[in-house]
Image 1 (spheres, rainbow, N blue to C red):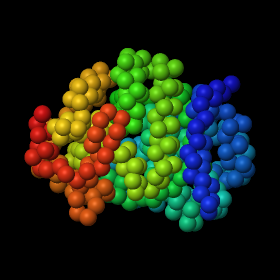
Image 2: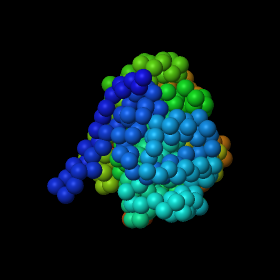
Image 3: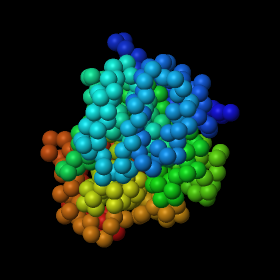
Image 4: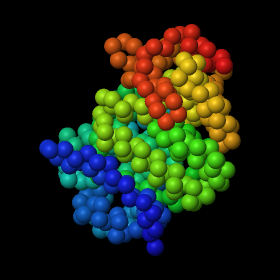
Length: 365
């Protein structure tokens, strides 16, 4: 029997339309026919997964979907290095070949890479089809599945081609975390602690105090951490859907992290690992500028070390290489790199007042 633990809402209602949607968090949701059939309501389905997740969960999901009007399954090769326009073309070719209509629903079954690409393909298909997020990694469950950012990478940078396209629903089945490799699970914890750093000092403290329970994947601790992370993300997205203001704070550590990924080559370091190192650099920079208590830096480093996340960039990442990579980041405005720093624990700010010397200092610290 399915066990629904939390239901949250991303509130995007406006005078013109209501694009709000729920986030369901529980166990046994992927295989629950009542849940899945309610989501598709007799429409055609384009199910997109990858060759690692598909063998584990697509069978149960397809059974739960029952006799939908039409079902097309697209299985992509797993990995960040496959997140490109070729994969989008593959998804669209399959949907068009099977003569899906605009009312068909795309379902993303997998991690953040699958979710980003499925959402972008849905946004492009016949100028916009609905899609549902079924994230199977911790990182996707607490971050990329919520908020409508979709897209692919480009040799010039990460996620430079994409669209804002909100899902109809986010379905988080905690049972999928039991099959998640240790490295991928750990990478997801980077996005979890980010929410405490930028938005909720009390949550940050709870994470620091419950690090062993999280490492052990204790069900109650995981459910609480995921629910609180999603609630914070939902509130930020509702306030600033297209990142014209406060949503930029969600990129804390990402300016550094995306640069690390580009220098290393996408897929060498996991996204969460690069962000983890980037957040340490950003907290150090915040402390060096006198805004943040240095104790927070040490607490973050301690958390990262406890769970197995990096606390510094790879040895080949020089200040010069980092600055060059950050110059093409999509968060650049008017030719200037924007950094997200902390004014205090739980409060973030966007700034451009960072020098090359500052960057060198946090790399070498």
